[in-house]
Image (cartoon, rainbow, N blue to C red):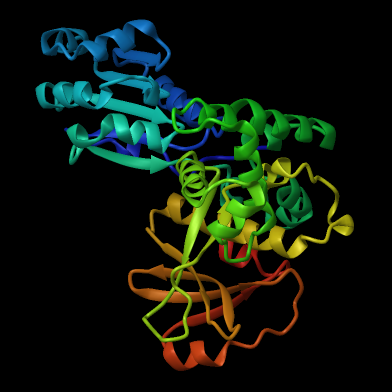
Length: 373
């Protein structure tokens, strides 16, 4: 399948600032970086991964003269999977301060680990972009072709390797390997994460609760651990770009729910791989959850790609009135209901009364591309 990223490196390069590219593994960060380097192959470039022992030792030493001697000959310095390099934030700061005209690019599959390494040193000295699985508006397909592949997107998601895989069996194999060998292994490498079985149990709980408010207490009881452990594991899952937490929207009306959260997966295929469920839509009872997760993830990807800096919430009251997604853009809010069918949806009275300026939309399988392209 042909596709083209909406985000690019060239338009995000600025003098005196490093560019940090976040995103999960296998989503195409390295490809995006290598494409940029190929286009700029006339410039003297240093490229390495965070596993390079020489790079690790250089930054670990924190020796300013060595760092500047290293950086001096190059116009571009690019380090892939930079979260593995200790003290990289301080080292890059020294280089930027000495050579603000040079281009510095870092990629990382863990916002938790890389942010920890960048920390205070690069405050005010970097910009970030987030690369996620391909969005609908990044695929070189017309509306008819996209709709014809909708079931595949709902079940197998849109990681690059999955999109290119021929046949369902290969897609399933890739997703299963992606979850077990990349996403979870990265998480389990962290010091705070000790139990792979507990991690999987917690992720499964989230996978089965898409569209519902999540209770950490209930999950803790189900997986037989304490609430703090559940919260810590879920926090890591979010920082590793597996799930996204969404809070309740409220203007402090008495009966609005604001303290609980919902969780969506960044990719439908990963969600389905977690619960080993790849049946076709005609054989599933979770089509509503698949649809809501798909719409949410696509709206979020579109926000990243277009850099509209939207905030996402859900809205629910204690007496049962609810709206799936609230999108806030520059102070303007849009209320979105995700419905697979074209059933009529009545706007909750309390919401209409208190948010008169809000636009209400129902996104279904017939009109969804009007909002995603």
